[in-house]
Every structure is written in structure tokens, then in C-alpha cells.
Length: 114
Image 1: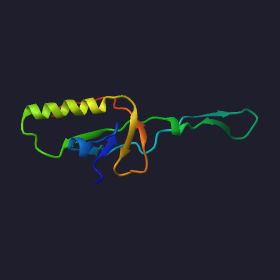
Image 2 (image 1 turned 90 degrees about the vertical axis):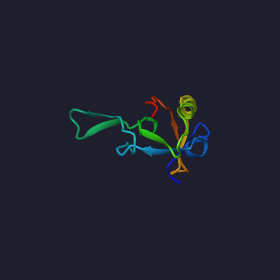
Image 3 (image 1 turned 30 degrees about the vertical axis):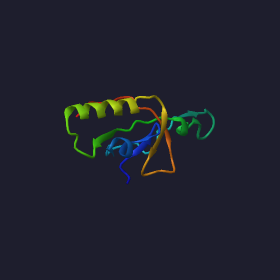
Image 4 (image 1 turned 180 degrees about the horizontal axis):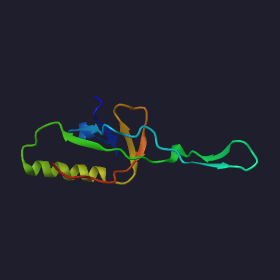
């Protein structure tokens, strides 16, 4: 299945019963940071930079329970477990769709329950 990810050693679907849907618009590659200079008396430009491999980018993911939660208390408990799992600092992230690759990722915001 390609609707999940592993983060901080736990899987969104197998450990929490959550399906992960990535935002429709997302950055495929981090932007580059190139500085170019024109040198008077010479043709062309001199460029420095392109630290693409060290750059960071933001991606939005929505998580949905793949099963009905029987009570509000059960939903709140799951929510708290998920927040605890995700808000742990920078960790290895592996998408199911790209199991041979990983990124060092950090969750910077959790938007709300329900």
C-alpha cells in the first residue's frame, strides 16, 4: 500500500490506522540558492552556490483514520498518541511510495483534531 509513511520508527497505517494523503501541490525538489556575479570586462557570469542537497522544503500531509472510532474518547486518545509520535523532533521519514529513500524530517505544526 502506498498511502502511508514510517516516521520515528512507527508506521502511519500499521501502528495508528491512519491513511496519509499528501497535498496536491507539493515541492518535488528543494529550491536552489545560486548567486551570480557579472565581472566587468569579461563575458558571462560567475555563479556560486546551489546547495540544493542541504535545503529544506515543506510538505503538507493529511491523516485520516481508516476505521470508525467508537467514541469521542477513543478519537481523543488516538489524536494524543499521534501528536506524541509526530512531535519528536527531526527523524527519518520513509514514504511507502519510495521505500528505498528517506528524508530527515520534522513536523512543525499539527492542525487540529477532527
